Each structure stands twice: as C-alpha cells, then as structure tokens.
Image (cartoon, rainbow, N blue to C red):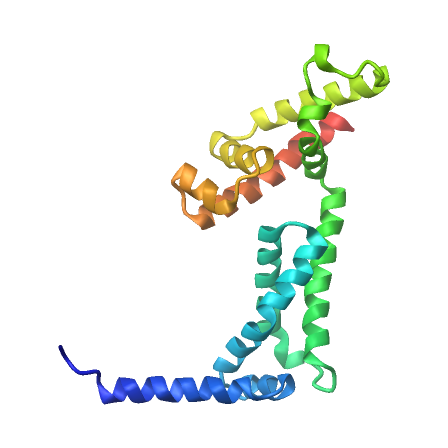
Length: 213
C-alpha cells in the first residue's frame, strides 16, 4: 500500500484547522473573513444557518422541498449581496429577513395562482369528487355543481399538458410523490424533474385560469 503524501496530509490538516478557527468566530467576524476573500467563511455561514432556516421556511410555506429551494435561493442572494450588508446590523437578522421575504413571496404567488385551486381540490379529492351515488344528500345542489364543474375543468387542464409534463405533475400534485421518487419512476435526473414540474405548474395555471373565471 502506498503511503499518503505528506503534502496532502498537510493540506487536510491546514483545512481542518481553518474550519476550526472559523467555527470559533462570531457571525460578524466570519462575514469579514469572507469579504476579505476567504471563501471557506461562506461555507461556515451556510453550516450555521442551513438547518435553522429550513425549519423556519418550512413552517412558513408548508412544503419541505419548496422550502429547500427557497433556502438555496436565500444563500445565493446572501453570496451575491453580502458586500452590501450593513455590518452594524446582526447577520442573523439580515439572513432571516431574506428568507422570510422569499417565503412571503411564495405564499403571495400561491394566492394569485390558479394552481392553488388545484392543490386545494386535491386535498379533498375523494370527499369532494366521489361518485354521484355516494354524494352527501345534505350538500347544497349549487355546491355539488361547483365541485363537479371544477373537477371537470381540472381534468381538462391536466389532459392538455404535454405528456412529459403531465406525468411529473400528476405524480407530484395528485399522488404526493417526492422529487426523488418521481426521478426514480420516470428515469430522469432530479434537475429535470424539478424543471419539468415547474413548467407543468406554470402551464397548468395558464390553461385553467380562463376556464374558471
């Protein structure tokens, strides 16, 4: 067996020592290190805030995978704009503000998006869209009509999606599959699944909007 190069051993030791030193600093000191050109300092900030922000954003938007996307976007924005950060403020307040604004935008966009109607319907799919003979006779006729009408329009809109978009849309929105499960089922990589699902959602929203106005 060949021996480990003393150069590589030294590099690993130096890296570990650097990480340890960064871990002992407070946020403001780590920020200054990053702004001075020490790239590892940003990794330390990610390490400190990743899980905390995940919990915060997940509790806000209620979708763990969407929360992960928003946290990634948060760190992208922090990386790009850290040079503008007012260092008289607490870094934790700043990064939570960025994440919180992204979460609020997500909720605002949902409220304006017809896709939300679809997702709300799916939650009560079996109860609201049971066969006619199983419907609750105490339900008001106009409510029954509305539910049947919406189900029909949802089905029509889904059917109009391109096949490769429709598959991921139905797996995610109707059957609640995770991105990883969809990737395995369709044989696509995770990035392709997310891209197709995003396009499918947008297309679905455009299709169904005029149907339900």
